[in-house]
Image (cartoon, rainbow, N blue to C red; front, side, top):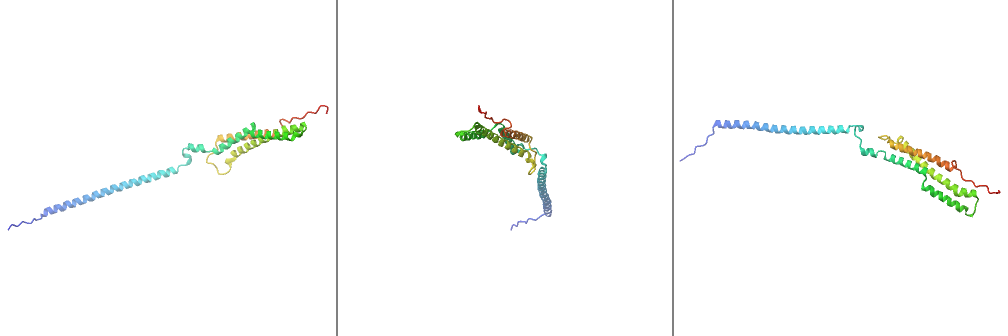
Length: 213
């Protein structure tokens, strides 16, 4: 009867296998520790970058407005309303000096009313007063209204920065210049209109004395 000899374990081989396993185990731990260390360093770098970006944003927010470059669009929008009002003031002053179609219409209306009143007859003095004088005075009155409006609008534009909430920027120089022009034209128009209405510059024609009177 053949018997197979049982395989015996060599004590030296067992010890060598245990030593190899022991050596491999610390190596694996070292590799795991190295991987964990690299991951931690990456996370730390990411946090540092985030903190740096946050500090940069805070620094940008802390910059004063005067240190920033002016926005050209914001500069263009600044003073638009005041500039428009100043231009309107100057235009009204020009209309007050040159006359408006409303003044001509009002003068023609007064002339027509005078003709209707004198249709039944009247003296020469009455004709001059009703047909010419009333139309002249109406024209002066309409021009005076335009001059007064030009004066008021110009003054409002000039004194507006002194009232209400203070503006971030001073009023543009060209706005003040145009508003001053409107005020000057308004004052001149008011003076001329007053002189016309009161017949200070040119008096109304007078009817001559009838012959043999």
